[in-house]
Length: 141
Picture 1 (cartoon, one colour):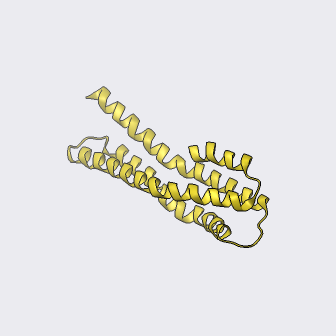
Picture 2 (tube, rainbow, N blue to C red):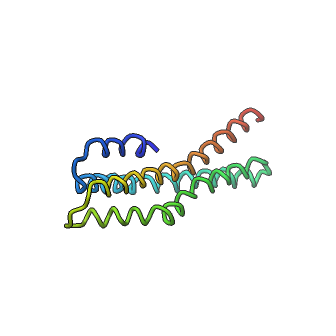
Picture 3 (cartoon, rainbow, N blue to C red):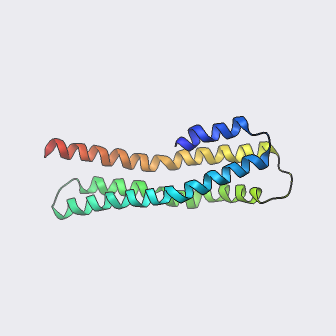
């Protein structure tokens, strides 16, 4: 969420041209694309590992870890279904030689930021479920 909360406002406040803003957004996407999917998949894997271990030992908490895994990985189909059109439009503008209005790019970047905030809520819910479940296990065990 920090990308939408801190980086995008800097883009909006400091860019005077559409092509520069699109280029910055494309670089932001590039670095996020390198790290964030791996983080999502590995976190989901850890929740699934915890869920399967708890289920094998008949621990009732397994389903909460499974829900944490499902919640975390839900950001992937959200991205594919809801964010891809905006991403593709921004990528097309990044490679364009045509004049593009700054207001158009600003609107797309703001839309992307709100979609990113929404997408970020899925792993946040997963983290809350995982953490509260872990705390319950420590209290009861």
